[in-house]
Image (cartoon, rainbow, N blue to C red; front, side, top):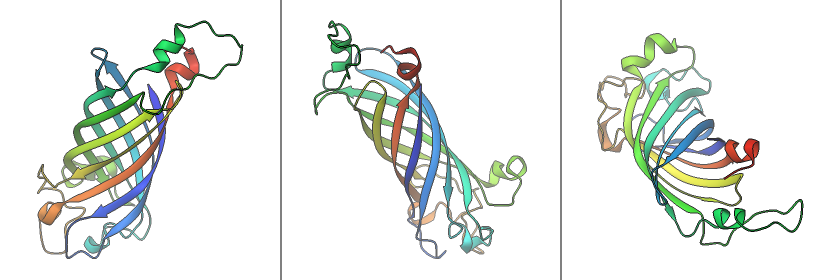
Length: 205
């Protein structure tokens, strides 16, 4: 299990709504379930905030920051050697020794499906997110565990590009119902800093 702060950009790939992009900040939690030495199932959820420029074309931006949930599930492939496992089996000479790894070790790739639950500032989340704020897409990521407790991941979510969501209305252009799906959808590109709660609290790999 891990937690992570997130920073990145929300990039609109559509034309006609005047919203090209926004900074993105978020906080998330997730975990992996190892299937074998190379493959795992991962899942995580983050709450992300974008600026009021996202949704202005619909009049639903509210003039303030807008938040939404990003949910992802998929497969993870571990690359290189797991040097942390090897190091844990060796005797430690010093009480406060730090375990690290070589550059090519402890990398991982992720690919899966994602869902966003969007709701403009000032709207009732429970009443308005379904069906007006949900969208679907794909997510890809690449990361590396630098120590047993800390890692980095970069990736992106492409919503409403391949997987359609014509019912979503928050990002529709005025008078164009279903336009949130037209002309490419939108991408959230991000960088995460992972903190492995299992290793921080339990001290085990």
